[in-house]
Amino acid sequence: MIINVVKIFLPSTVAFVIGILLTPVLTHYLYKHKLWKKKAREIATDGRGTPLFNKLHKDKEVGTPKMGGIVIWGSVFLTILLFSLVDKLFPGDLTTKLAFLSRNQTWLPLFTLIVGSLIGLVDDIFEVAGTGDYLPGGLSLKKRLLVVALTALIGGLWFFFKLEVVSVAIPFVGELFLGWFFIPFFIAVMLVVYSGGVIDGIDGLAGGVFAAEFAAYGGIAFFQNQIDLAAFCALIVGGTLAFLWFNIPPARFYMSETGTMGLTMTLAVVAFLTKAVVVLPIIAFPLFATTASDIIQLASKKYRHGKKVFLIAPVHHHFEALGWPGYKVTMRYWVLSIVFAVFGMIIALIG
Image (cartoon, rainbow, N blue to C red; front, side, top):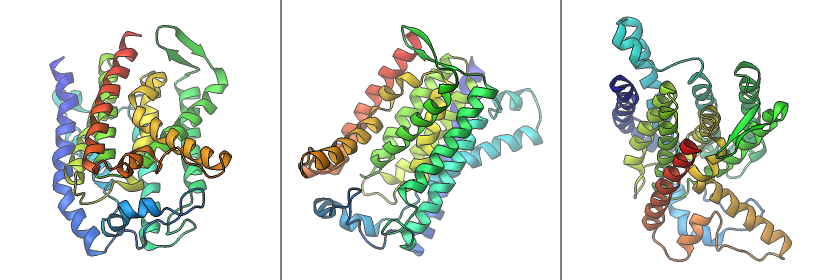
């Protein structure tokens, strides 16, 4: 038991330290090359203007660097590399027990994190360069969704053929057989979770939310005796907290697509690996609520002759428009994230 606890918390601590040490170098590079948007967003996804959003965020959008998510996946990757090297160079009972990179538990979430983060990084590079087919730059939404869908297809096929997963667990009910339909279900879940990445819109908001969600799934994995997966989740929490240290108001940088794409896609994979995907809408309630608010707003504008439900969508910007300071929105989201994460974890474990 003790070695398992150490196996989980030691990588998390190391990732946090590496992230803290990595940040000054990254920050210097981002500010030196002015890697932020060259022009504030003026057009929403429905093609309409965004005057209220610009009033709240115009100065921040063009003066704060993107790509802060590098701190998260960079610290995760370097920590995994460090532990793997220690295991190879100093083979022994202790180092073997502390190694957590395994084929059946961590290969797929690590692959997903790397793919999502690197594609997100490409999008961020295009966006700060002011080029691409989505003004003011970056990959188009269709292309990003295509990448997510293709990655999800690989993951769904892996689960179906390699892990022979053909059902999902329903708390207090039992297994729901899906058969081959498991694959499109896997793709749909990953796309929905990815859409919640737009929560990265206020200083400190996304970091705290993601940390709570991965901590919850780390707890579920631990009690399921998936120790390697629990260690991987804790590793992401450590890297995210290092990012959050520098992202609290006033943010030194934004997580942006290189952080949110990798984290949302990986969160979906972890949910399936723990067989707790049904409680994902609870544990990741802030992400689902963010997506829902966007959908509601777009539907309202389309079918109610331009009338809006929220002053600004996603909903966290609505609270800002009501007059809430950004830090108040962030702190209350953190509180709700912890509450829903704990509640979802309880349901997953006793159900």
